[in-house]
Length: 76
Image 1 (cartoon, helix red, strand yellow):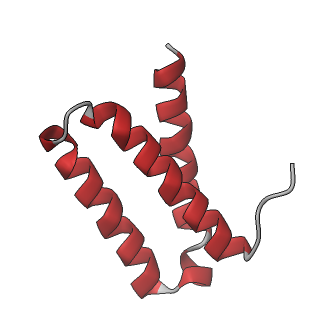
Image 2 (cartoon, one colour; image 1 turned 180 degrees about the vertical axis):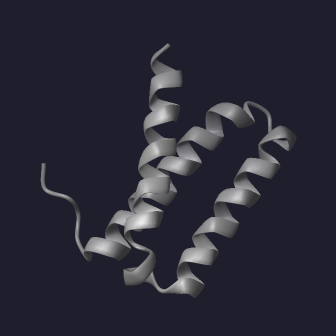
Image 3 (cartoon, rainbow, N blue to C red; image 1 turned 90 degrees about the vertical axis):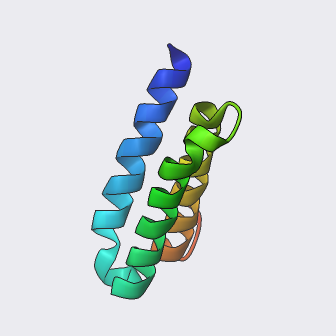
């Protein structure tokens, strides 16, 4: 259950950041992030435990988006 919740959070945050930061990133960088997400999604079936690893992969893409959009880590 916790893994599913984490996967949904990573999914929502990634897409929200991509939409929020599209202008800040520029079209090329945003499309690169989109292509990386699609490649990870398409390739998850070829890797053992790919579904679980895709969640972590998506979270790493989200962290990279935060750092590129806000130019720093988010203060909690």
